[in-house]
View 1 (cartoon, rainbow, N blue to C red):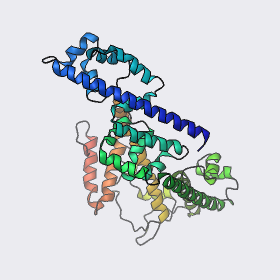
View 2 (spheres, rainbow, N blue to C red):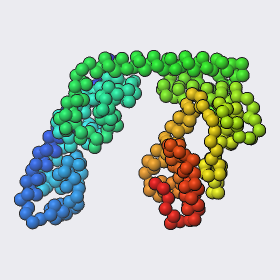
View 3 (cartoon, helix red, strand yellow):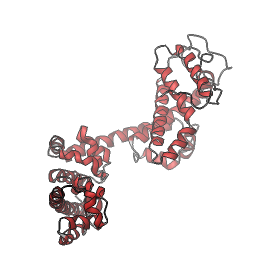
View 4 (cartoon, rainbow, N blue to C red):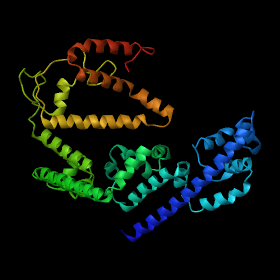
Amino acid sequence: MSTDSQSLLAATREQHRKVLELATLQVMVRETLEGVVAKAEGQSLDSLTRPHGINGVEVQSFLDRKRVIMSGRVLACVLALVECPSMDSDFAGVMQGLNPRYARLARLNKPAIDTVFRLRELQVRFPDVDTRSVASVFGDHANLYVSVVNAGTDALTAFEDPSTREAVLAVLDDGVDERIRALVAEKAERIQAASSELRGLLDTLLDRYPTRKDQAEALGVKRPHVQKALGGQLSIDVIRRLIEAVRELMASESAPSPPAPTPPPRGERGFAATLSAVLERHGGATSAEGVTFTLGEDSFVEIDLDPTEDLIALVQRHIEHTRGLLNLLAQIRDDATRHKVRERIARQVEELGLTIRLFSDIHPNRLTRLHDDQRRAWAAGPGTKRPR
């Protein structure tokens, strides 16, 4: 272990010690305060805290172990209620040098705190290994390790459950360092293999794109991006996406020129045109509201098609991107902004829902008339019920 890692490990253990001290203070004050509240028959908590300028809700969250008192007006109020104002110096001493992200852990019990810091020490020992790789060794409890790294205190209350805690400790006690090193080695091999595959594909393009810069421009990325992928400096997922982009480029350039826009004869196997031409002929019509690639009763035409692996991979890639982007927009914090975005792309998303229903149905052609009716209902204006 490097000198820096050793110093960080020592600092982490000091934080562990301070959190346990703060947790002890929380328990002492909380139990005393519970006795005070119990004796104040007929009085609400708010009536007890109001003379001290504090809302009862803030103190109740402390009693419910939803918050940690460390300093400030809430601490002063609680210490006044338990008639121990001198304990303020005890809190001040513990808080000196205690990282606020760790202080929040003091609402957990001691076994849970100890487990959290054992996981934190694991992170210190493997600073250069990505979080998800380390988390994977914990199986069903992988997200708890991620919460430790991200200081997600709410999720870490799970460690107060003995069965959860014991499951994680069992992994920590069963050669976890060796397992992580093995994962790192395996990941490095997969990245190297993907980089070699990418290099081989790019080499086939040298006659048309003789430099890495030319190849990068054709792929729509920067040259350093390609160079890093070839050097195994990017994640396996990023390299594989670049591989798929190269295959897509090769397929589009090797395909013959698109024929006249007439339906292909039945029995024809494969596409005889580039992707854009195929979509123009078979991707669907444009709806009355200007949404492209919609299928209705008039535009639905059955075709004989045996999709290639490259085409299926291309579809999967675009579905992943669409799903990821919609997930991104769904997480916008501001309600008004999220509503504005939702209204902006509402019809696109609604049509996407219809497309998914068509694809998933065993008899898609039977749904087209219903979908046309649905579009007419949408066009009727506000108040029309839309599919969920």
